[in-house]
Image 1 (cartoon, rainbow, N blue to C red):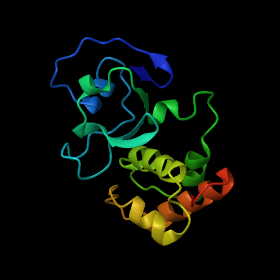
Image 2: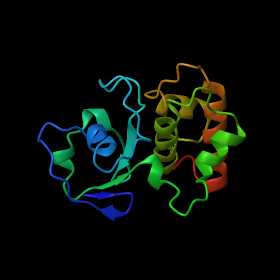
Image 3: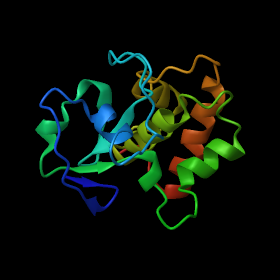
Length: 153
């Protein structure tokens, strides 16, 4: 598979989830392991451009896939517009859910589901923030969508 633009070949047990693979050998610890049941969204990454809960995805099933994690979102060192918006809108508190929120926001915008606050709330509803930064998260997604010139398709 390709992770953040780099081809990787890693020998794994056939029961290994994507979150465990990412946090293991490549040591990409930005993807958080929250509930480990697909309920919180902390482990959200993009696989072939689509949002995926990496704790519910077997790594073996992704042979030949393109995986994008929070570490690969801004490879040149300059923040992605969604990351910048999260900082500007103060859309995080403890930060634990932030990587999953950011990756889900990128997917939400790319999918064309950021046309209104209600639409953003609906399409980001799988990502839980225990600190309750939801109003700021919605503002950040909306601002990033406007900057990227995307939203509704």
